[in-house]
Amino acid sequence: MKTKAAVLRTGHGPFTVEELEVEAPRSDEVLVRMVAAGMCHTDLRPREQPAEDYAGPQVYGHEGSGVVEAVGADVSTVSVGDHVVLSFASCAACPSCAVNRPSYCYELRQLNMSGARPDGSTCFVDVDGQPVGSHYFGQSSFAGMSVVAERSVVKVDPDLDLVNLGPLGCGIQTGAGAIMNSLAVPEGSSVVVTGAGALGLSAIMATQIVGAGTVIAVDRHQSRLDLARRYGATHTILGSVDSALEAGETASMTEQILDLTGGGADVAFDTTGNAEVVRAAYEGLTFVGTLGMAGVGSGDVSFGFRSMVSGRSIRGILEGDSVPSEFIPYLAELNVAGSFPYHELIATFPLEQVNEAEAASMSGEVVKPVLLF
Image (spheres, rainbow, N blue to C red):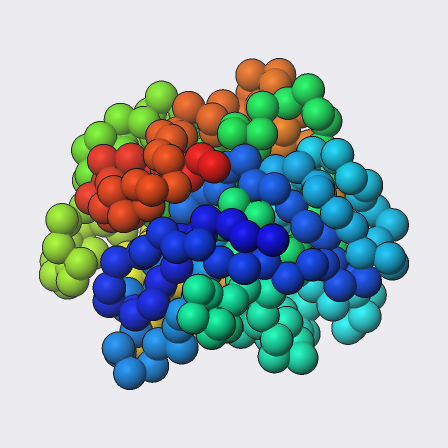
């Protein structure tokens, strides 16, 4: 069959909307007709790689929602006609998957970021008969029809709006899960969230669900800080618009955190991947505070020995330690109940405006772009 898809052919070029041939699903795969797909920074990371390192062409997209059109012979979790949300892929067999922690799957990189199935094949072919990368995060949801790994598919209530469900598969569940699962923030705790994009704002919404006390949002856009206030932040810190922060500014950020919390935050959650911001948030913790890191940066981040042995802890966070089949329906329920209004962050774009959606996201104009099919 044929479908339209947004293809990234060069790391620093635009997305091109093309017609692709789609292979039928294999025994352990599901064919999904996409309704919506969230755009996340992870879909744009090729822009940060040297051009010679880009392995395109590729169909990105890792926050999809849609309807099942066909299933492979061995698929047991969904049937034709089911409404589904798509999330990351995992192997189901490694030590992490065996203890129900699929976001730390030993095969995570191969299954989610290789641009192909484990055997190296793809489900997309272009008009010239050349393969186009697929199975990004098990799904490659920037396509009207896509072949998806069964482990990436989560069945949801058909009465729910699939457009609103589109972004749940990665960023929203990571932000909420960081607070609710990974860091298990206790009631009344003080929390710092650095970065108030979709990931950070979802985390701030989650602080209200767990009953956190002081909640500090840090961002370089005042408009994002205004949203953070709306969704539960009690205080905000406006950072530099420059990506490289001066030492004095990071010291000031730490001082403001210490002052606002009366001596240090219990928990900090970073979504920026900026080493200076991470270090400033870490130094703003209590001596037994915890820093969670979900922002993906490049290079190294360092911490002084004395601050490390004080009792502080650091942990990396992938996908908010969620089990998608359980956590995604739960977040959808919270949204319907009105306690997790992440849908208010969404701005929709037709697939043909994929480049405009990217520009709006990168400028900060839009918090969560969602492509419609």
